[in-house]
Image (cartoon, rainbow, N blue to C red; front, top):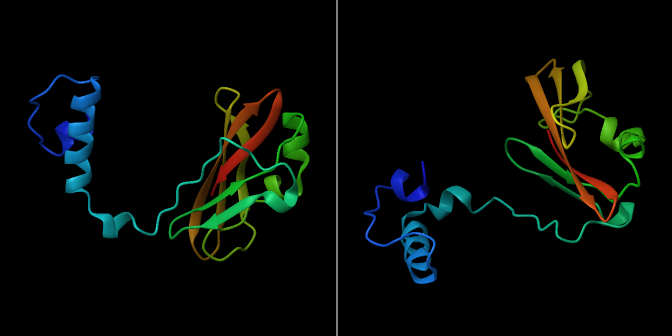
Length: 140
């Protein structure tokens, strides 16, 4: 379903027209609960980090996000200890690995681990190719 349908906004104008889309965007933004999302952070990955010191690590209530520097290959990416490391997103303790990183289609990788205190934790890596260079977005 679309946001318009989900929010029960009456469909008065044709979609995919500049003024109509602006109208619907305004209606959607008017109905948003900003307090619910104020602690969320959007990370722009148009320009990826070039060196380790530029990498981005953010901790949210339910997950952590890491945007790494660029790597030349996927093998180099997965050889990096910070990428391979599976830690609990609540307590930072190492997870017992149940499923190591595996891919569904080549650009998204998943893993499954278990924290003794917090239970199962799944990880997800999205790989983005930038001019034949690889970097990743990790979410645990």
